[in-house]
Image (cartoon, rainbow, N blue to C red; front, side, top):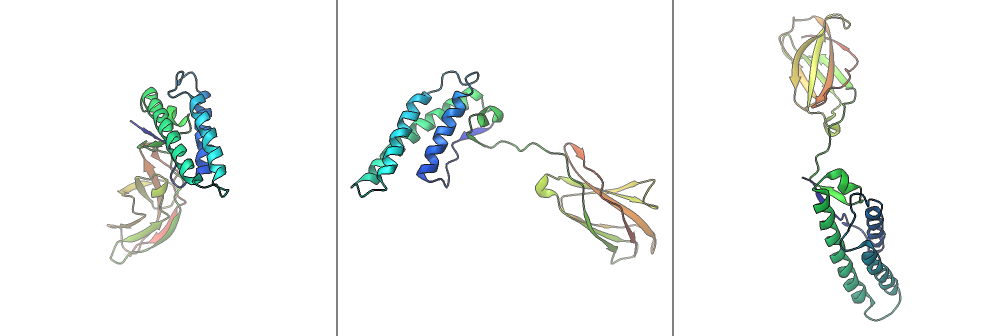
Length: 206
């Protein structure tokens, strides 16, 4: 289950005011799901208006303006946390429904995406007899969970699986016929299956 969060880290008071209003507007636009928000968005927006006025007063020399602003910010934060709890309960932790209010989501799993084509950076003769070393651009940050490696004698037909490699973007292929050319290709995969194969690369084994 996903958890709704306000997402205020690093925001100035002025930016928080804008975010409070955006969230209230998004809740109002989702009456089908959020029919009876608590507190009401009207109540929160009225509090936010006072906060905006108090924030403006801090730009003058008015004594105690910052303290007044901070007390009103605490009032608004209390109301926003109640609204967040309402959204959490009403959405039953559904990440899509939470995001429809412009609240952020904590703990939601990132859905897997179809992998991009692998780019082989280098293919070279290995250190030991009958080996080849392949190095390619990592797609781990794009959701790759493993890599499938294939071999073909002519680079066109009879591609044979020669191993699955974890997310490390490098492998040493062993057990090859010494001093024999061959073609190799790599594809990244995850729970959705394999992405497109890399362009074949020709390498002579040790």
